[in-house]
Image (tube, rainbow, N blue to C red):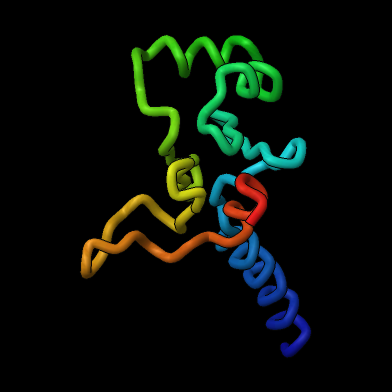
Length: 116
């Protein structure tokens, strides 16, 4: 009976482990100073049509930049990380909290994008 119980428990454990895996989109760092998600690419000056075309394709670049004018200096990646080229910092999200302060600095993205 213990063997049957164990055999039934293992597939349930495997299924629960697989289903709880994180699905947060990952930022890619194709070259130093450039970060991309699946929609945009940016460098220390902001969202770049040239970099988006180079790493994600011309079609994607056209799609993003044909939506009208927008501030390319402050942007949020698909995983929620917010970057601001004026402050040269990336934050864990785009929201303001108590005391009108931004969320915590996201050190990995900040270093990859701004080198600090």
